[in-house]
Structure formats: C-alpha cells, structure tokens
Length: 479
Image (cartoon, rainbow, N blue to C red; front, side):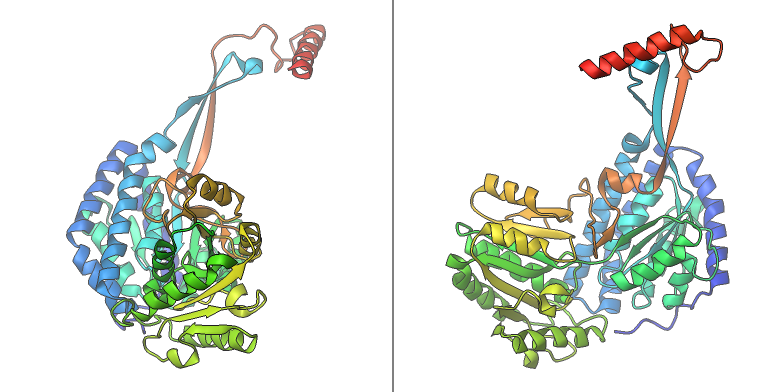
C-alpha cells in the first residue's frame, strides 16, 4: 500500500512551528484544570463516535484491512479515550501522602503536572488505536500533542487532528498532525536539532527506535518506545483445544499477522500437540484471505515473511498449511509451521505476517523457558482448564502482559498498562501508568507546627540532635 498524495512532507522547520503552536494551545488547555479537560475530551470522544464510519473507511483505504477490522479499531480507540478522560483527575490530581514519623510536622502532598508538548510517532498497522494510546492519555494529562503518523497512513493522522479542532474549536491547535517520510518523524524526535517536544512516544521497529532514542538523547528528551513482539501461546495438556485453536488462529492471522502483540509462537505439551495442530490447520484453512484479513500494508514485509518460512523449512520444519507457495501478493495465505528449531528466524525474529509456529514441549516448564528465551517480551497467553494454574504460569512469564484462556485479552481493558522490555521497548501506555507516563510528579510539603527537635536548623543544640538521631536509629534497628 502507498500513502496518499494529498498530504505534505513536513520539514524540520514545519515540525518546530507545529510544536510552537501546540505549546501555545497546551498552556490554554492545562490552565482550566482536569474537570474542564474531562468534559472537553468526552465531547471529542462523542464526535469521534459519530464519525466512526468515516474513520473506519479511512483506515481501511490506507492499510488495506477489511472495514470490519477497522471498525473494531475505532471502537477500541473510543474505549481508551473514554477511560483516560474519566480517570485523569483521580490518578493525577493532588493527594495527601504519609509523612512518616520523622516528618510528622509536615503535611505531604503529591500531584502530577503536564510535561508540555508530547511528540507521538505512530505506526501503520493500527494507525488510530495504537497512537491514541499515547495521544488520548497525553491530552487527558494536560499536554498538547504533535502527531507524526506513518507515511503509509497520513490520512488517519490528518483526520484525527482535524476532528479535535472541529469538536473543540477553542483548542484547535492542541493536536497537530505533521505528515511526511521518516525524516519528518526524525525531526520530531530532534534528529535535525531540538524540535521543542518534552517527550516522545514511538511505536515501530527496534532498529528505528534506536535511531529515535539517539536523537532524543542529544537533548535528554525522555522516550517511550513500543517496538513489537514475538508473543507465545502456552497450551497445557488439559486445555480446551478447540478454544485454544480458535484463539491462536485469530491472534496469528488477524490483520494479516501485523499485530505487535499477535500470536507468532505456540508451545503445546507433546500429548496434545498433534491434536492442536490439526485444529489450527482446520480453522486456518477455512479462512478466506482478503475477507478474513487484508494484504500486507508494507509490501517490503513480504521479503521478511518469505525468508522466515523458507529458512524454517530448510532448518527441518514441517509446513502443516501453506508454505512459500501461499505467500503471493497482495494477500498472503495462512501458513502453519511445526517443528521449527528455536534458533530459526521464524522463532527468533518478528515475522509480522499470517504465519504461526506450533512447536511441542515436554511440559509447561519447558514452555515457559522457551517463551521467555525470546529477545522480545511484550505479551503472551496461557490455555488450561485450571485457572489457578494458568494464573501461576502467567506470573512466571517475563512479558508485560499475559492472557489466560484468551489472546490479547488486555487490549480492550483500558485500566491495564501495556508495554514490554528488551526488543519490545520500554515504558507503558494505557491505564494509570499510561497517564503518569505523560506527567511529572510534583511534591509539596507544608510545615504544620514546630517539631520537638528540628533537624533542619543550626539553632537546635547538637546534643538534642544526637539524641533524636540515636532514638531513630534504635527504632529502625528493632523494628
């Protein structure tokens, strides 16, 4: 797919001007307070809901995904924006915190203040839902935003910024969209000199994230990076295999496999591996590519998918469904592989296509070990009829999010943070952590009365200070 031609390629100068406009708008946005922002964001949310079909059509036209998938993406966006708007005051507002025995004479409070202007660099696979996980939460926290959508989906970014200006005409410059190639995003991150943003939220490949991080480092601009995954599903011997197969096929093939937290690896206990493979193949074969899912949005990704599948077969894997012949543009057929060596690219690298690897393991201990051996650590899933055992396995996994008896269960729960570590990046969006990611803690103490022994005054006799310090030491040594 290619980007539209009706969107400008903004330069570094254009980016800096957009940041300046956003900063001015951000001051007006932050001043009234959280109650007013809540009401305004809910007005915008209602406007987005009223225009949901237009957004879905734009997403579908730019990505190639079926419109029914795009409609679901819009709904998820509304769910998260609603939660951020309604919960920002509770999460970020000033509250009293314990002062402790040593400072009982002080009243201590904590609040979170806006950072200023947030630069958001979005992806093409979910061009509305994913960046809004930063945009919506950043706005709810009192910031302005400059959004650089993928060069493949500029229309979504432009439409989003325009919709806010139309819904909130008093805050028309609060969300600025800058479009163009990768150089525009690099300029937003500061690669061509400081852009003026106070934080960058990036979604994309680990390689690009490193370049963005290097640009941000020049001005010590903080970065939140979400860089993809190689998510695994663990299937126990007692699992409902039909439910597991249904979820695996949806998680692996949905959006043509172009989901950062989608299913790419499956580890099934040997006693059920063959039966699970049979069920997965049956469901995947029943899919109609082009209806169930669309084409690869980034045409060059086909080279990666082909390399992974062909190398897996060279390494001794078995194609249970599909294979190199199924990988024909524009819409690839589903591919199910088994017996793929753990050092093969189809296991170690992000494939980002309608391909799933289903390997057998001795037991769930080996499944956990293999799942955690990946350089990525974004999400995972566990299937077992024993829910307590499933939760115990989830707690052992090193990923940022785990679903038990479902896949991507966390995506529609806005109170849950989302993010990973390693090649999956760092930082969190969504939930309370997602709001705090775009705010700075602000501590205030108020002296209520004079303490019996003032440790912060030279006028206090040294003997009294020494006795107080010794008393404190003894208390800590005892308790």
